[in-house]
Image (cartoon, rainbow, N blue to C red):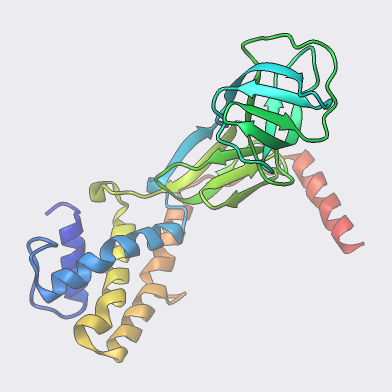
Amino acid sequence: MPQSAVETANAALSKLGSNKFIATLGDGATESIAVNDRLDICKRALLRMHPWNFAIKRKSLDAVWIAISNVVNNGSGLCRVTSAAHNRATGDRVTIEGVTGTPGNGTWVVTVINQTTLDLVDSVFSGTYVASATDQLTQAAIFDYEYVLALPADLLRVYRVDDLVYDVDYRVEGRTIISHSEPVELRYIYDVTDYTAMDILFYECLAAYLAWDISYRITQSSTLKQQLWDDLFNPRTGILPKGRFIDATEDPNQKLEAEEWIQSRGSAVSTWV
């Protein structure tokens, strides 16, 4: 039988010493209910524990930009921006780019007039707005960062951001990355749903992890649960450390460029001063 959710479930039950195997996850048996409750959670947790090569995706994350159509004096000397529906609230921050003829570019706290109009707090209007197709605004973090970028829906763990940029400054908050730049080049661990795509050692780890997770529910044996934990996580003999080591050694060694070495030495010195 090819790798599948049902086969994973039966492998876990076998590790529990069960002679009863299931044909489907929804057949109503006690074992099926236990597996059905926990399999997907165990899978996603195990994926987060290591950057498995089979589970890595790449994606370029862009800010969601809203077109600006006008910038005028609000009557009190502030810049009033007209845009497409911006979905902002008073006190939010936005980053504006591309505006010419008047102030506006930069990151601002806003006062919302309506869903297509907002004022830039502490701005000073001058000049005459020159419309262009490049005028746009996007959501900014409430402080510190200029861009808020939505993470992919299937993301389980951010692995690398802008690999080729030294000293990248970003934060993962909720289902977003906040950053000083965009686009962001992202490598991430995704929620793999195709069991046939899983590395065989991950697949074996998943069966062992699921067995450990449901063991007391099925057997009421604390001793068995401890043994399954040791079989999975023991640093010398556990299948998970072995699987992670083998997976990691498939990657080439990282080359440390001279400039990066000098910068890292400088950072270390400044840390100790």
